[in-house]
Every structure is written in C-alpha cells, then in structure tokens.
Length: 438
Image (cartoon, helix red, strand yellow):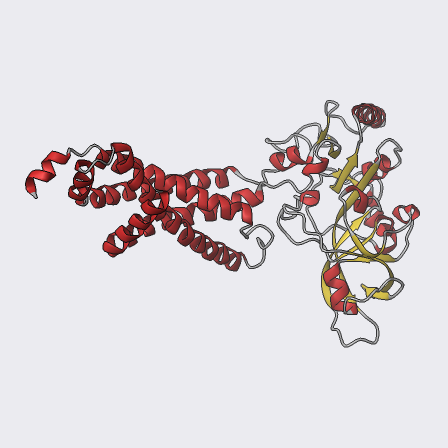
C-alpha cells in the first residue's frame, strides 16, 4: 500500500509541476540556509580531544596586576609567563606536560630549487605529540633534554615533508630555518584537530603548524611569540631578550595530562605551593587562584562557538519555520483542489486514515526532494563561506555524512509538519458534498 501511495504522490506532483516546484523550493531554501549555519556551528563546537576530556587540562595562573584583573570575563590570564612555565615543567606529577607557543621561520633547503618561504612553527616540549595523540609517519620526537637545552632538530608536517622531500623518509636530512641548520628527526601524519584546541588564542580554526621545534631553543635563537603576548610589568631583571623572558608577560600555553583524581589532587597541591612560594617572593599579589580546564570547558571559556553563532543558528531555524508555513499554505491549496477526488475515494470505501496517510506520504515525498535540493544549496553555501573566508575556515566549512543525514531528517520533519494540517483537513472531507456535484 505504501508503494501505491508513493506512486500516487509522484503522479500528483507531475500533474501540478509549478505548484510542486514551489513547495520543493520552499523546503529546499529553508533547509539549505539552516543547514549552512547549523553545519558551521556543529563543526565549530566539536571537541577533537573528547576521548581524553577527563585527563587533559589547560593550566592558568593568576599572576596579573594586583590593582586590576586580567579582564572582566576571565580574571585569570589565558597563558603563562615564561618563568612560570619553566617552573611548572620541573614537576614530575603529570603523566605528560606541554609548554608551547606559535612562531615563524624562514624555511629553505641548501642546493635546492625550492624558494625560501615563511612557515608557521610550533615551539613546544616533547610531550606535545603524546599528549595530543599526534601520529608519526617517520621517526619521532626529540629527547627530553632538548626541552631545556638548544638542540637544532625539527619535526615536519606531512605536507611540509612532501613539499621539501617529495614525501620520502627525510629523517636525518637537513632543513635550514632562519639560516640555521636543523636536522629532521620525525614526520607526522595528517593531523587536523578542529577547532585547534591546543591553541585557541591564535585563531581557533587555523591550520596546524608546518614544523615543530624544541622549547629549549629560546635563548639561543631569541625566540619571541607570533601569537598573543600580554604583560603588565617588565620586571627588574634587565633589558633585552633575557628581560623579556623574566618579565610578567604571558605568552606560553600550558597543558597537562593527569590520569586520575589522585594525580589531579597532587598537581593542585603543587600549584598551590608554587603560587604561595611566589607570593613569598613578592609575586602573585592577587588572591591565590589557578584553573585546570578540560578541553570541553576550554572551548566554552574561550567562546570558540560565540553567542553570535548560537543566535544565528536560532535565526536560521526561524527562517526554516517561515518556509514551512509557506509550504503549509501551498499544500493546503493543492490538497483542497483534490478534494473531489478524495470525496469519491471516501464514497468508494477508503477510510479517513487512508486518505490522511496518502497525503502525508505525498508531503513526505516533497520533503525528500526538498531535502536533496537543500543539501545542494548547503554545499553551495559552505563553498561560498570557504571562498569568502580565504582559507581561514577550511577545517570547519565542510559537510560530513552526519550533517547530510541531519539535512534529510530536517527536511522530512519540516515536510511532515507542513503536511499534517492539510492532510488532516482533506481527510475530514464530507464525500456527499462532492458526489452531489458529479
């Protein structure tokens, strides 16, 4: 019987092509617009570290000016000072711990036709790759001693390795960074966490860095940050680069992995003792305060998915509702035109439920067609956003199979909602009225 109703629905659509096209277009436009916005919100709200949400923590310390909080929304700086990061790295409590920041080098190869170019670099400690589950194709990371001493080694991304060495095993080869020779010790596989949760301070949806170098190179190469750097006191440790390292400028991101509640409690005690010790030395004059935030909490704190995005999501659903109301009006007009036919069927013995089901299936058919067209419109919308964003949203401006299924489901729900009243209305038709007119 369902197959028969579907054939009736297709025949009905062909009999009124213009009206049918308007109904499909109403559903398609609503689904396309709403799915474009909802897809962006869905991708932006993803937690790439959800599987480790209970053991990974972003570390914050309130080392800011006693006379003024860091900002109104968050009283604790998002990042740490260099000297605080170095002190925390000396703890043996975390399973893994990472101090890092963004930087940039000029990359070139000796005796190569490849022209020098500037690339984003992640200056980090060796635990970065373990803590964030970064996969390797060739080689691995550096020795722990490189986190505190200047070892000129580098880990390449897969794309960089393909660009410089045509994808071959480049471990042991040399790359020149800012005129300094670096030995390649590893190449990571494709790795695209989105949002880039390990550094949401510098564009949450930017591409992963091309190269990774040890944290111990700061003094030798006088490495600053290519990300956000904020400070309130230059300190009394002198001028120049060493003065910058010893200042109250915050520019280091710090993450730890704490495997259980006991380890977390121990680390909290360590942080409390460290801050108290710094207070005794005249630092950390604000009330004792620190924070350990899970990845899911970190995304919310940093407003990776902003309130504006959420409001836009609700607006898109409201627009879909308007489209559904238009579809209701069109379906009602279409079904009432078929009232004589429904009256004859009722007189021949068809039940009201049969009439209702037939017309609800017809509205569902319209919804499926509108959903397919809406998916195509959503793909066009996402492509337009990728073009306008000029690469800034490539990691999130895409539709996966989950969102395709959601689009079809949304179209079906919209068409069923649009068809409920018209189908109910025609199922209540009194057949005697139309038999008298025949």
